[in-house]
Length: 262
Image (cartoon, rainbow, N blue to C red; front, side, top):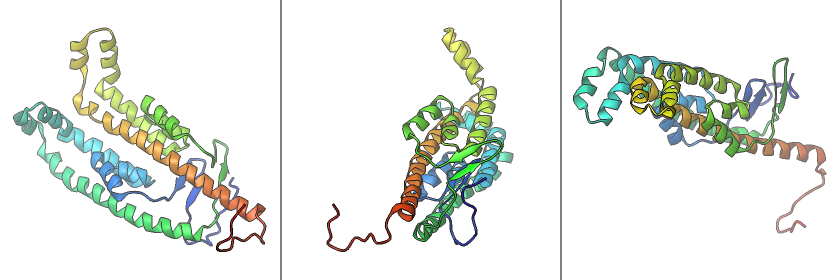
């Protein structure tokens, strides 16, 4: 149940509030979005709230990366073992990796440029949208969130920052894959051995091809939570300003050029 139902009288809406989260259009830097797609295909599209495309590219990255041994080759190259890096790569998977990887970067950049144009037009149209949604399973509404708090929870466990700002779809997806990465990388097992002082065993138990996914996941989770907290606060301010202007400001109120407001 929403406090406003779209009647399709607007060509473009700035945002949509549902029990699964708040989806909004705001200005973004295309180069930043492209960079996140380069860091991990799918992340750029998730930042744009293009969930289906983002999920497909993310899963594709994990499957192809693991089978092509790309992360393993990266570890060997960091260690200066170039010959081992070449040997471990599986070209049967590697050759299908490159075109899709480049597509993810290009498409996220192109989509960002288009959405920035849509954002400007939607801001000018300034049409009403729902700001409160309640259902049998959840309640979502526009209010202010603390960006630093969203980052803090994301650094503790990726996905918690998204839960804090009510991005349920992103939170669920990130948490599920975080469990997968921890399980196959033996990350928690390595941490337990490290606390016991067994440094050699801790290092040996790690699966590096799965471990290398963590920096991208932690970085994306913190960045996504921070940016969406900031933009959510801006959206709340705009919606509140519009509501107060329409319902409480006198229709005779005017500010003339050169007039000082006391």
